[in-house]
Image (cartoon, rainbow over the protein chains, first blue to last red):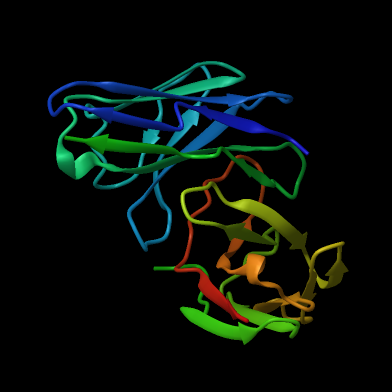
Amino acid sequence: GAVVSQHPSWVICKSGTSVKIECRSLDFQATTMFWYRQFPKQSLMLMATSNEGSKATYEQGVEKDKFLINHASLTLSTLTVTSAHPEDSSFYICSAQGGGSAGELFFGEGSRLTVL
Amino acid sequence: LAKTTQPISMDSYEGQEVNITCSHNNIATNDYITWYQQFPSQGPRFIIQGYKTKVTNEVASLFIPADRKSSTLSLPRVSLSDTAVYYCLLNSGGYQKVTFGTGTKLQVIP
């Protein structure tokens, strides 16, 4: 099956710094990728839809200037958490949608961000 | 407003069959029903997908009634390693966004 890879798997950073998370579709082209955030013992919350070659679409309540998304190619989307604070500590997961009418989503392994 | 509703949690003994039901009263004509499994600190993993009637693969079966307002994931003879959160999603392709409901936390007991 299709594979989506995230990097890094985990990252620890100091408050105020920026962190970039990469999401790659390894064996298919992904025009659209999705970014989710998951807090402990909670479900995945959709943050934004990443569209190749255009601006991302953010969900209500998600600050676009804080969570910068770039989808510069058909196989790579990046999420940059700018000026990170402890409350941004979370598990970030990306997904890419395969082609076809069923629209199966393929998920990355997730990236654990801890902001000190 | 969540598009799907599932029980928050379920317990089962090893070796038993587990059925997890998901309600999706407002399912659209072009929506497919997809189930994912998630272990702690991992991304969700695809289990099975269907549109109507019954679908079976090597790990699970999916039952969808004619009105498609609900679906049931059936896991045969669960083991301890099946302890996870199971999510039922509706997706219609066409790069439409997909939102998650609460999921069902399945605890398999020895």
